[in-house]
Amino acid sequence: MRSFFNEGYFSDLLPFLILGGGGVLVLTLDALWPRRRSFDATVLGVPLVLAAVAALIAQWSRPQTPGPLGGMYIADSFGAFIGITVSISLGLTFLISRHYLKQMGRCRAEYFALLLLCASGMILFASSTELLSLFLGLELLSFPVYILSGYFRDDAKSNEAGMKYFLLGAFSSAVFLFGVALIYGATGQTDLAAAVAAPSPMPVLRVAGAVIVLSGLLFKIASVPFHMWAPDVYEGAPTSVTAFMATAVKTAAFGALIRVLLAALPTLSVIPIQTLFWWLAVLSMTVGNLAALTQSNVKRMLAYSSIAHAGYILVGVTAITASGSKAPVAAILYYLLAYTFMNLCAFSVLVALTGKGRERLEVGEMGGLGWKHPGLGLAMSLSMVGLAGIPPTAGFFGKYYIFQGALEAGLVGLVVIGVLNSALSVYYYLRILVAFYMKPAAEDVPTSRSAGVGLAVALTSIAILWIAVGPDGILPGFPRLLGWVRDSFASLP
Image 1: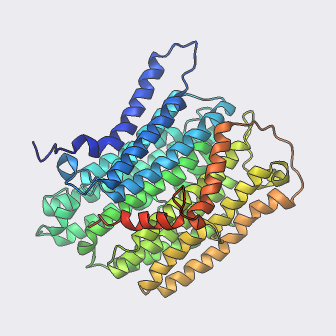
Image 2: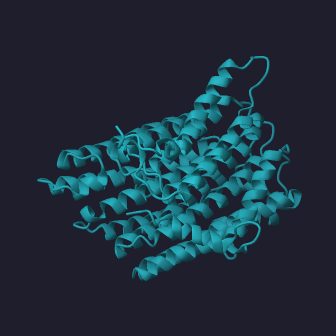
């Protein structure tokens, strides 16, 4: 019993308990709240997110100890960094959601409860190499997103998004669980590290199980060939939900992928795992960018952009398999943080342009907006320039560190393909800015102001530059952030 519930049991699980318990608390208060008065879930949600961030920072600074639940949950600096990034995404999503849902006529407390429950699943998902707790985290993050994708019940596209994501997500979960079953059948272990180290009479079965588990994780990051759900789901889901999916879900999925890959590398070394990830990176970058070139809907364009960015991050994953070193993890973590701010900035601008149940999502509807709304135009410019990887934004430094790690691993050809793809993406990112500043003003669509959305736009815009070139001072700048990123993977095996 002592080994299962160690002395740091509750402190280690505190971030997970705050967010998961917060989701249950929001649902309970909403049920008990007087019907004549609306319950504002953001008043409770934002402090819960800040409390979770504080708990994750404390987890970072604590010395490494055996995890709670018999090691099924790993409370380390890597999990803390992933959790902080997820919490940043959650907090910014809270800021933009209340305004957006009110404009769309469906502001309900259960929406915010689902976000909190989803974030708790993400923390569990990225903080384990025990296959059963990994599966529990996967399902806890997935089911709320399925519901949120179809949150607009009267919208056919939202219904389609929810159903499509649910069906394909259930299939990917079944694939993941099948891989878990193969590993357990081959080794009698559900802890991945123990399964790799244990002697097995059926090593081929163990390798097959590890590959299938990785395939289930690749669905969540929207990597080719598991990417076809992303454009329809991103377009049909509420814009605030799309923002959360594009950032937090991808961050948590890459966190879990890195843990599983590093733990399973000794087993996977008998197959050409480097070649496999090389092709996954190339295809994801190329397919995502080529498809984005032809999109007129901004959310679909950002969906294909998300596939391409998964490819860039997979370049770093390929460097891990090529070098056998965990050093490229630092570049991946920095890239995930930068991508979170850049994507949320773009989606915050789209939410700010929403008014009276009408959204501006087509490039043709954005004519002249850069002059009519200078602040939003500047924010969208920073976001698009950053996503394209143009200096001095965080997007440029993210790609630079990813490609640098790949070069050090000897992946010159992959880096050349990545740079060419990055150059190709400039066209469709700058196409939005051309509409903002160089196209005639489109039909006037009512917009409304919101302090929460304005704060989200300002914070993400500043962060795109600050985490790239900001000096250390009163606030941590770029040099200190790099130190944190390098320290965050020190606890990985």
